[in-house]
Image (cartoon, rainbow over all chains, first blue to last red):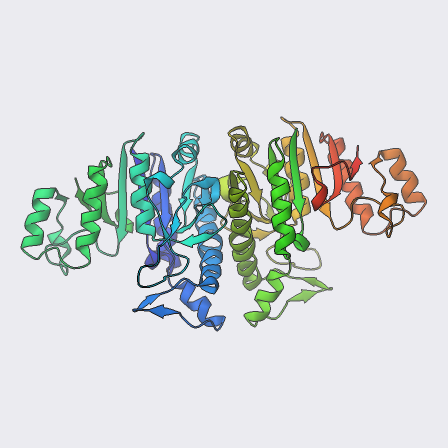
Length: 255
Length: 255
């Protein structure tokens, strides 16, 4: 089983949590891939450099100055910090942006009403499966940041969840794949304030029922819709899990 | 023949020169590795961030703030810029720090009289030859920045010339290797102001003679001493060449 694990900015901003997670991640014996988001460092760096956030409709626009900051931070500082900690823990990690090995070729998001700048959209056709397979088959662990490229020397800021899903679908063509999204919750809870109400397994029928009862709502719906699509496209399981629990059964498994 | 080419900061600071060089580099048909220095961006960024340069005996100390800036810039911005331009030119480049694939494990320079901070010393034993060979044998082109690691989660700022020499020696164990150092001159000149006085080939005997006559002097001596050591350790040729001329015979070949 190939385990693909996505961590968000919350862990990255907390050195103790990150170290603890990377120890746990290193203990996974099967082949594995880590995909990481960015955390709050980009906003802090932009502020330090006196670059005003460029916001449209409440969303940040990735202009050239922002792209430079996120490229340095995500592909440089954060990616190499994670890789060096994994090396310390005995995992032979290889940090990658989407440009490296042409591993993710995307396109700049087309302008409809708003130009969000250097933001990348990606799909299955843009994944260099052979390169990831070469690394995995030789015992290396890809560690991917959320920067892709367009094949025309343009780097693109890209959603880390989308990278995780797309990589999982691509590799499911040749591997049995489990995709894990790490959250600050232990999984999907019937009562968000009570960990004892964890729902361990959700299939499509139960998902419909939970949506109708309002137990799964708002921001969780697009995440779960996307997860079930990934499963339809060949990924064996998608897990929603706390970063501390990736090596345990405490999680919600979608199947 | 495996060609290992080192470029310095001058090219990196000049977008037109860099683009032109990377086109030429992409046209090299044999397996190849690129090693790049950093340019003036680090000093500019430190200044923007209001970080005072920490200098001892006229040399910059790599303190934590400086290490963070050079890691973001060298392993992030510059490395991914180069990789994305190479992809545009049809070279399947893979950007690497020394932590990636454990490709260069160094040690923090021991403190004698001065602590230069997070600066790495490296040697042959620290090179993961297998990983570089895996990439090369599968058609990928490693692009290496001058950041290494110590295996204990510490990143280290490392001399790019030393990385180029050490990688060349390591790979010479299994490959016929040519090492190219790119300069702003076309090679070693009898008269530094006259390109027509290029010395095309220098062997050890001629090197002694040129040193005695004062034609090779000062900063060039350690560079050439090092180059002849690399040749003694199995590298076929070391070339001193202008970045524009890497695909021509206009160069000084040490042998």
